[in-house]
Image 1 (tube, rainbow, N blue to C red):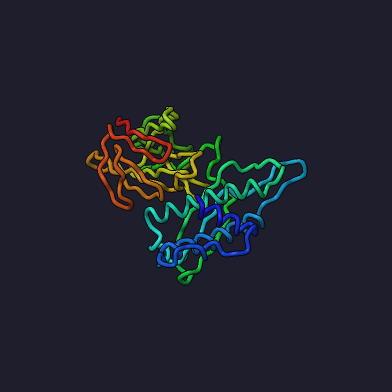
Image 2: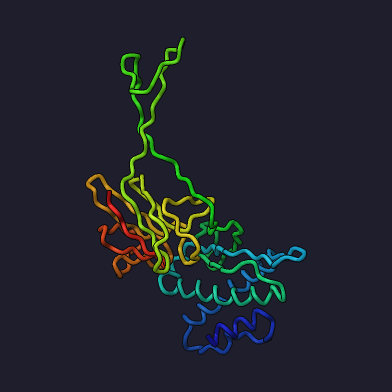
Length: 284
């Protein structure tokens, strides 16, 4: 943590010299990483200071999530472990910095998340930071997803289903919608404790933290390492289950990391580990 600590001190203005100047000149890839890290950390801190506020008698509020938009080429270069190290390093520094900026007041924001995304309008080497006040960890809010309905054929008076009556004087009959069918259930565990059993009524079910702009069918709240859309679980016409990992952090299938953006088979007995959550399929 020596480099991270020196970068933090430089960001805070405690030192006048660039800490990157002490990096071995024979290791240019490492120097590029550090320069990129410092530039982003400084920009996020600037956004944090601009957005934070403390109401009279209240705690200090700071955005809990920061989205860093990169050029597509830069985004491609920061994949895998490099990307995870960058996000975790920023998270560490910003968590410490937020506590320092709040001073003696209580900090209302208890956790932070940093996520890298692509912005095709940016040139190589450019980036921008967007704070997110809209929390995706809205405990206590019930998430409702649209129910699937099957199209109903037009009925005439001689084909009324049981319980449907035609309105007097009208040539139309009451339309009866088909009720949604539960295909299977997903058992959700968090830190070793069973949280819920979620009925799944869609052939393609989304899994993740979700947000007001990103609805998911199986929400995993309270863990900033879970992406808004972390995985997709598919139930095909042959009765088989498939998993596609999409999150930045790993999705484990029975202890083995599932490849991102690739559909892999999953059995009901398999454990699906997503950060601090574990899911199991419960067939009907």
